Amino acid sequence: MSRIGKKPVEIPAGVTVEQKGAKIKATGPQGALEMECHPQIKVTIDKADAKIVVENDNPQDRRCKQLHGTMRALIANLVAGVTKGFEKKMEVYGTGYNLKELNGKLSFQVGYAHTVDLPIPKGVKVTIAVPATKGNEVPAKFTLFGMDKCVVGQFAAEIRSIRPPEPYKGKGIRYADEQVQRKVGKAFASGAA
Image (tube, rainbow, N blue to C red; front, side, top):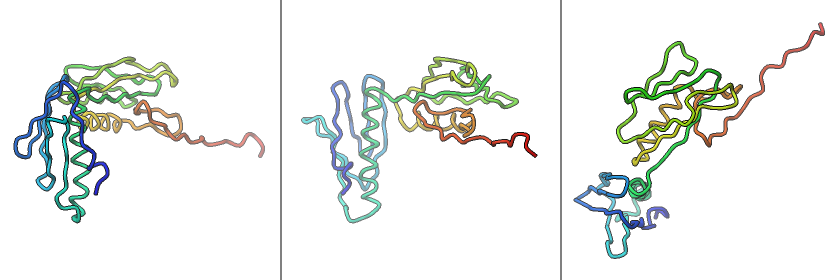
């Protein structure tokens, strides 16, 4: 049995969770989210104890075992999203690199001959703390915030893929908590021939 799947999901105060068939809808201070549960996994809402219990009726089936923990994690993310939301902090390193928000798009200038524009997904807010880099030491900083963890994470991954950090100078777009493995550049022999 899945150790994660066995743990019940706590429903915090101020959050209401409803179930209609296979659909679960959570409403909280941040808004409302809903998701479809897999038919092989049984989800029960215990309103008296304010918990959501996820059960696997077929523990011998490998696929059901995998889905048990996954469904529990997705439901926990649903509840956490409507309670406090999710954020992803990102940084841009590189001389002359910058970003700005224009007409629902995030526009990056990161060393290409053109700007790269990405449409901001519905439900994601972008907060730009530092719009442009100052040399290679002070990065441009921005934060993505949204209720849906999957949407925020996917958008962050798409942004990072525009210009992933390179290993020599560390220039590029990265997550704020990301450690970039650095390489030593070529050593040139000096004058002795």
